[in-house]
Image (cartoon, rainbow, N blue to C red; front, side, top):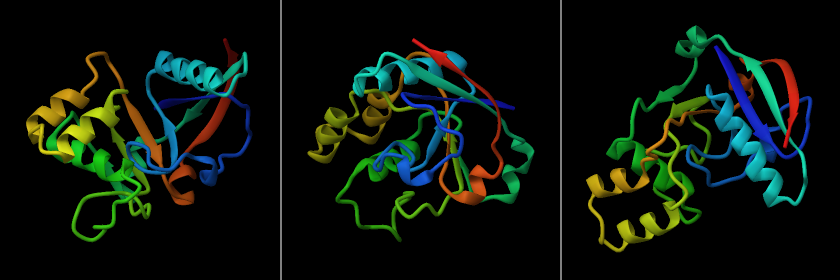
Length: 169
């Protein structure tokens, strides 16, 4: 399979420590099967960091090998997916043993839908019991096609073989 990563800077080697904490699936290296989505990520990150140029890196990855890894996949937005994202995005989360999360990178690879950009408001409403689990899933779900595969360990990123990169404005 071909995967794309959008960024505001060019790099040769993936550095997991550079990934932002408290993302949907935890700190890691995020990719997508959708090239236009990676281009949008590059554009958004470039704007955020005040640079005029973004980069899209293209990787080959053998998804048949995922079975040999600690791999978690969400086929669609579900309550489990919503709780997983909520727990990973919460910097105060501490119930590591009892609730599904990836704060300690126990999963090498996580795949599933992207949560929408209103997540902070939605999660606050849920935490204050203003939304049910079903309403949480509906509120977090993007209405447009989206996808992400995140890699959280050196073992996970060993599957990625960089093919090329290109600049994107």
